[in-house]
Length: 102
Image 1: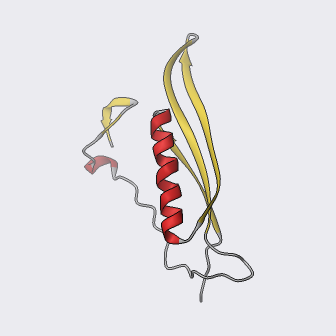
Image 2: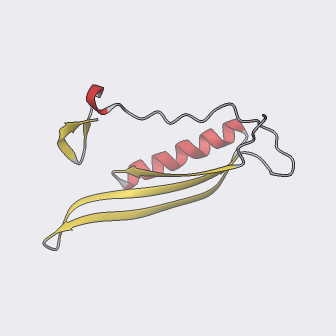
Image 3: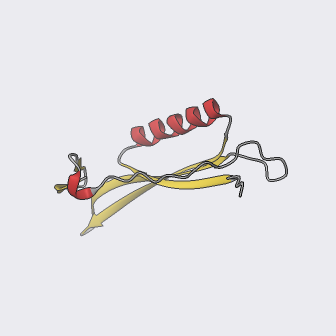
């Protein structure tokens, strides 16, 4: 069975505005170099407060990438991979939790 991925929307958490801008640029470049279209981008600033004081800040970035037109698709789907870090084997520390490994 041939399948065509038409569109994907992904949400990412990054720690700073600079990280959000870098991610936007990276996704834009990947889309352009692969013949896709970045059709949507949104950044939302988030905070966590404790007793009225901001104790944590981050950005949620949402991207929508269009791969194919439903009427005339060009690129068949080979696979979709979600490559997550395996927490017990990770070597990096999460910025918001200095005690856990990533």
